[in-house]
Amino acid sequence: LKSRAEAMLLKTENNGIWFGKDNYLFPKFLAVGERFEKNLDAVERMAQRHPGKVSVMIAPSSSLVLSEKLPWQAPVADEDIYHDSIVERLSGQAAVYDLRKTLRAHGDEYIFYRTDHHWTSEGAYLAYEQFAGSKGLPLFDRSAADAKKVENFYGTSYSKARNYDVVPDTITYYDLPNQLTVYTANADGSESGETGPLYNTADFGTRDKYKAFLRGNNGYSVLEGNGTGSILIIKDSYANAFIPYLVEDYASIGIVDFRYLNKKVDSLIERGGYDEILVLFSFQGFMDDMTLAAKIATP
Image (cartoon, rainbow, N blue to C red; front, side, top):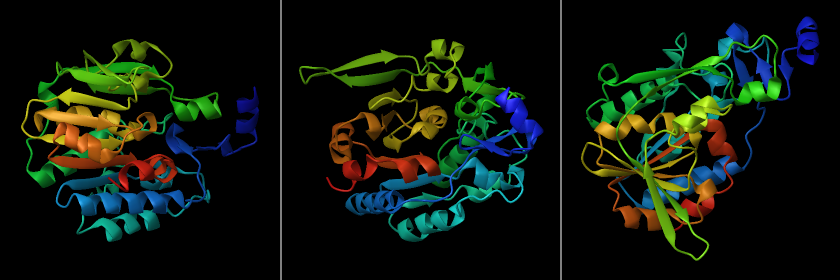
């Protein structure tokens, strides 16, 4: 009833969510805090310690890429300034992937969920194409993979706004045989690993369907690939839809989310003998992450 009343009053936002055109819901943020600079500095220091190994991909928000769908004169932070800063600070020390032009060129396609803050598998693939293409890696062939669709996805933005006329999303994923080992720390200080499928398909039947990718956000896991060499992905949940595409490019794909792991990055690099490192975050995830700097700034 509240949502309907607000619609009648032509209200353009609720509970931190903008009501955009074409049924898009956009997380509202007005400012970028000092944590952005701390995290950027930490990435720079890690790249200096590991010259030639580090790539950085900070995905722009849907409100930046699809700005024409925002409510008229909606105030938002000037995100472009910070993407420019990432490119200026890190170029020459890391391979920086600026996705703004690529994603804007496909802004009329289904590259972001309407009801959720993540990009879709299509949006993630566009980023993957830019990454793999620049490195000369073989591209994941989506036409040869078994694509599955999950309907009626209501994401994080809908959970906050609860607008009455929402249009649910569709998740597409690729059913791959590659095995993922998720490591957990035991109470006695030891570690155990559980090897299983790339997705927890049971989560596709729950409210939080996106959690099915990579069986959720885990501290440290390793994906078996079909290619050669190895890469460590330092990430937030945006990377979860991107990582499956890498199976044709690497033999071993380490995945770390420092929000759930109390270790430093250099110990993981040594442990896995990783040839490459990719920092992959959403812009909002990167600017808000309270754990990243402490885990990667120093060995």
